[in-house]
Image (cartoon, rainbow, N blue to C red; front, side, top):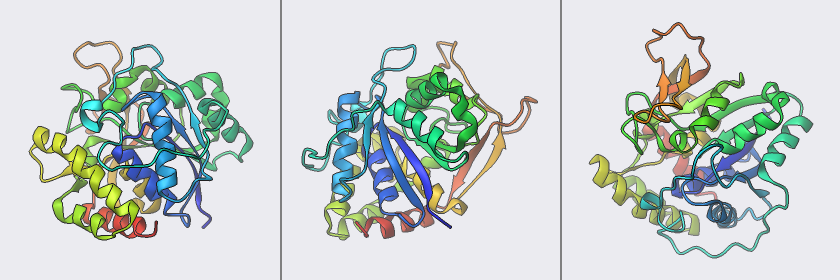
Length: 313
């Protein structure tokens, strides 16, 4: 089969960086048409810069990187420097990027790419708040029917929330955008906290990254060393969850994941549950399914894939 054509929409973030590296290391399965940056973990000026840093770290400076939206659709931006550090990629020492930022707006790139490609041949892979994707759908409703699939990291059901008691960060930052995306009618696959919290970078798994001895392996290990301090303290786990690489891994080895096709609605009104993914896991609402909501992961298989592919770079 030819590689799957994707657009990565991202707010790097150490785990976003690993997701991008995995995609760029897997040309047999994935063709990265471009990367669109969005404000999220850190402001847009840093996320677009970080995306270019990661491309150069991977030895892929020809990858097209676009800056997208710098704020949520209807709210003030919430960022996560308390997790990812001031730059978003704190931990390793990484060189400033020299590759150019593309002149076009990221939303325009998404719209134009979907309109020019044959319908059903481009997958969108959002790793952060859904502002760029929702803005594209709002400006060009015709693209919804042209999307092959939206595979996103966001939300939760059994794990509930990580930025509020009820909400996961990516969805909480721009709940209006998330609501638009989940209502667009395109096929959607969700990697929620229920899955990503099982993808833990334990000490032996991080040692395997470091043992590569390559700039990529060492950088990934140092990224994890940095942000795991927050998650270990918060959750009491043996390591930090690698959220966003689950999206890329699904495109390469979907059999690593299991879930249910269910209805998912986004709460946009309540102060207590703003940004909650109301996932009808038990199918009690009677609402039509609109997303494949993953619930489990083969963590050993996931880290075997990740280690093998990153060793290519």
